[in-house]
Amino acid sequence: MAGALLPVDEALARILAAARLTDAERIPLSTARGRTLALPLAATRTQPPFATSAMDGYAVRGTDVARPGARLRLIGQTAAGHGFSGAVGSGEAVRIFTGAPLPDGADTILIQENASADGDEITALQAEPRGRFVRAAGLDFREKQVLLPEGTRLGARELGLAAAMNHATLPVRKKPRVAILATGDELVEPGEMPGRDQIIASNHFAVAAAVESAGGQALLLPIATDDFASLERSILSARNAGADVLLTIGGASVGDHDLVQSALAREGMDLGFWRIAMRPGKPLMFGQLGQMLLIGLPGNPVSSIVCSLIFVQPLIRAMLGDPGAGDDPSRPAILGAEMKENDERLDYVRARIIGERDGLPVVVPHSRQDSSMLSTLAASDCLLIRERHAPAAAEGATCRIVLLSRLD
Image (cartoon, rainbow, N blue to C red; front, side, top):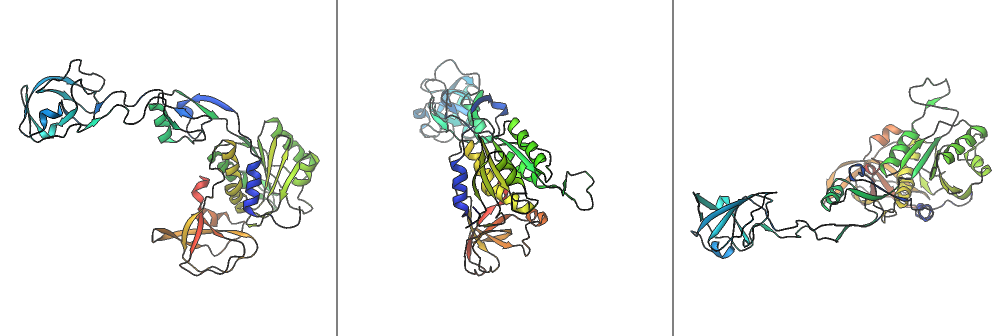
């Protein structure tokens, strides 16, 4: 495993191949924001269930208003929730309001701007074509029509549609439980007083946010120190919590204090791969411990966050049944500065979007790309992709980027 570096696309394919769908559960519509459908959702009713008016005005027969100046007799009124029980005959009109059911016999709306009322007499000021301003029954959807397929992520638009389809509860995938373990003697939690040789831990909070954004449930474990006993207790905690995935941060390399891989091996880990041909993120590890999937993220902050975007979020979406979990997230852009040739590792360069040209964003890389610099990542809009062995590129050349908003 310590030989050639694994290409990013192959690493992702192996991770996604190991993903297992989480179980389904039914939850109230009101709590389903951000969840993923476990089954296709079909309409239980036709919408609208009857023809309705799209405007305020008068419900009439189209043949009666085929010419301006036509005079009609007002025989009643219909409003949303309070329909007219009679029928519209020749030469008759019913006052109607937006959303109200169209009375029997009527097929056209004479809008109030185009009508003059004098008591019970209505005069058409201009002709209206038959069917004007009428929303036909089933205009939006029909009963039994599948409108939300399995794997749909439920946002405001999807939840509104599900409600209109008359679903009070929804079948969704259970959130993958993702245990997150930061490791290292040098780490202390935010708010604590670090020792002379310690730093504040930050990676696990960023990784947890990426997990939650993708639809998972993040379980933050206490920081583990660099000894086997502490690591083994943490691994046991993840198992006892029923974690579907364990994400470790740091300690997966081969130094004297990098014990994570060894600790997992002692617990029975089946190592899938280790070390990726990417920058930042080279020491990424993937394996399996029983039914629990394992991803060992690099300890450098930027590396762990970039790997969460490229590998962890697609894994969570795959476990939720998202059919596009493995899709290429990149989009075209234009270089706003020249780039040097690249080496054997696919490079994710932190960059800013500074404008637009020919409908594409113009991106400029930050001058410093050290993987410890969270400030540079926070000031970036995207990751500029430089393929392995890419030649030098001039300003104005096309490139591809991944938007960092996908993490949010």
